[in-house]
Length: 259
Image (cartoon, rainbow, N blue to C red; front, side, top):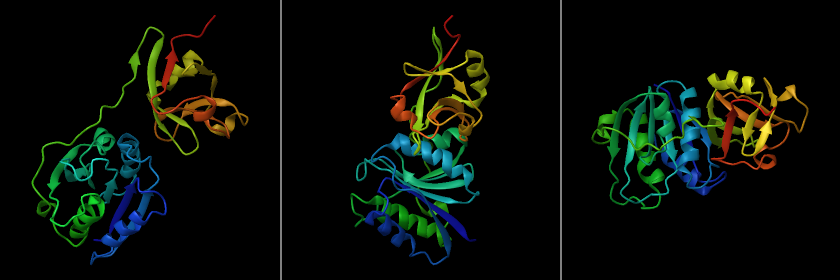
């Protein structure tokens, strides 16, 4: 079976580490399609990586093998794992990197991968996970990778919660355009419409739109984004800069506006 393999790391675009990771994969006998998801994630930011992996990887066909390396604890006692999550297979450190994927699909199986003698303590992606991927690509069953594990490490994800002022959430992700993706799901959009605004920090965003082009350039807008969550954006600008917001910034659906 011709398989797809994806790569997600914080190694940096154009990094020699990415090249070495790919070189290790190319030792597979069987042909495969290699897709780069991202290599410019914030360094050591497991939560940012978990969001990207959980959003992007489920879009690939079942049977895709996702190799994910954002591993600030490389060389320590944290496990390396193979996991089958909703029919997609992952090779990753067990440090919470698969948390968002696990929130969207069930964990069907997971196995711990031993670190072989001679593996560099600081590059388990190249020396442990990529060789494990090669074994799978060449037809080895997952059972040969290591023993079953019952569950995986999971990060605590913030949930929207009611306050005296309204429903509070926070910014989960800032994309490359500076758009602020919140943890408020699309189902809450009617409540935003009823409130007439979305508050980001201490700034009100009263322009509620279907898409960015529905308002003039420079306008702060709120909308339901393609990820299925409510977003704040600046049309043709950066909401993170102009609204002074970042990962974790508070957002609020107010019960009613002033007046």
